[in-house]
Image (tube, rainbow, N blue to C red; front, side, top):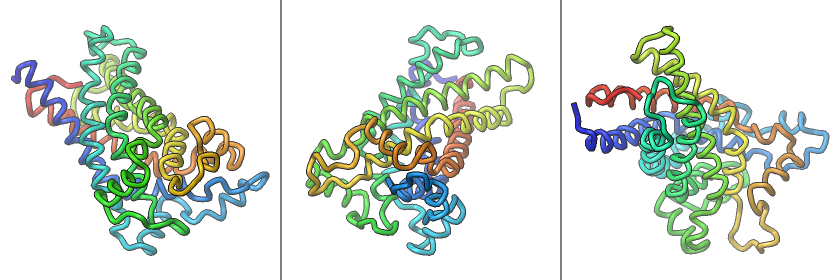
Length: 310
């Protein structure tokens, strides 16, 4: 059995490793989701939401992925993989690894009977910390994945190219563009995902419906994956729009989205409520498997190291 100090270090290593694996597997879905979220951006749809929906370039997750592969080659589905993996190594290492220690700080000493609100607060806090540090990698990931769609410029050849170009043309602040919605999304995602998994798992255990093990981990993570897709999709769309918007050579008063609320209002006014749930299916198809793989591996790694289950 590992010592307490070893447990803390290993928990962070296992959190990052499991989430990086999940990110690699789900990258094609993530690329498709980004394209769908940007499809028909702020098109004038007053009374014509249905027409705009029918005229999408990326028509759903399967046809959208096939369209990307046809237009840009199969490897286009792995655009942004490097920053995605770097992001997970920082963001998810912190948000998943810190969840339990922060939960204890909030007074949660009994994993089987911890109030849901303490789990939500712990998840939101760890998500905010991880995301605020990892924002530049998230921004570069979005920019790289958005390249290649009709009418979009191709500015970056890869992670280093994107980093240096953004730093040179937009400064340090450019690397943190969209930090506010990014952190807001992370709070929603981590509060829902970790608390949803944790609470679902222990509710099932307490009811005697299942025993600790892989089947329980998969069941709890499936439920948590759907919950997080529902709660995070609107803020995910806003984050993607703000991070991807053109800034170079644009006057400050002509920037498309000034802040989170401005982006929210413009999407609702131009694209309707549906605009906030663009890319929902790929978002769910990414977050679902991502959640399952992440927590299943996280629990398996802990078991092999002799660390108690989450």
